[in-house]
Image (cartoon, rainbow, N blue to C red):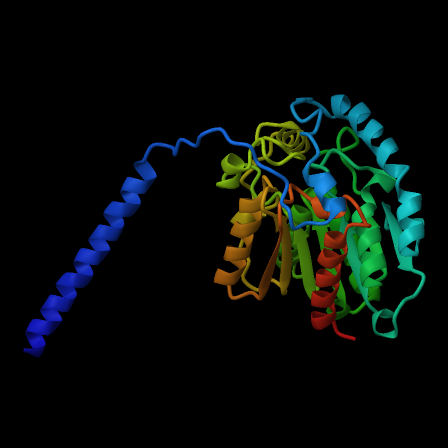
Length: 353
């Protein structure tokens, strides 16, 4: 009887496995799901500040396609000039001081909250800004760092890395690593963290991959926000959130061209440019942030899954209705404060005092 039971059990298991394989194969070969056109309202349960951001029209220049660094430069300069005008108000509201500096030849900013708690006096965060590797030079790259310094009350070093046309891959990576090497010579790495959004989120992940390769100390924690973790455009939300994300808008929009200009012909699937393909074993605890309408929602979710599969402590926070990086748009939005307080709390739990 036991022998018969074992044979029946084995047969049943085989049938289930075969069915699963057939189902998976059928799903991969299935035609795309046809979704009727529909209107998508602003969620009713978000703050008025975030509702204005979520309900804004699609980015006006989302479908520009500059193919060289020289063509990107005037676009980056115009955007930076507009964004830099907002920085003084952010600094004043969040009570943060900023100073320019150079770290081993790399341009950077040091941001310090007016009130630095005793537990954070020996801690230091490294920030790498976003902008598809071609946007937000200088002070335009500071909002996220200001929010982290202000809401989290940490001292922050923000890397103003080189971008096209000044330099292409791996310049941004090299600059970020130069700063990291300098930081860990003066600060206990157990008291440090790295964070950034979009291209900065990808750079955050790439910095850890490279530190592992080079045998350098790792930070105690990282916070890659909506990272550009796959520049080959693999991911469900590249389709489901296309024309719904009002920032990136489309997988074939401006950001795709920016990344390609920076890559300068380098293999986009290289883990330095698409970190989701890297080995994440041994990564420090990680907190990721995205939104339900984010074009890079899948990029973020896939990194989270890969970290968990590698046995890494990883936390994922998702903003209701938010498109790409909406959480760094308005420091007066309650959702923004909550995101950065969540990250700050995560860092506080993992950074040595």
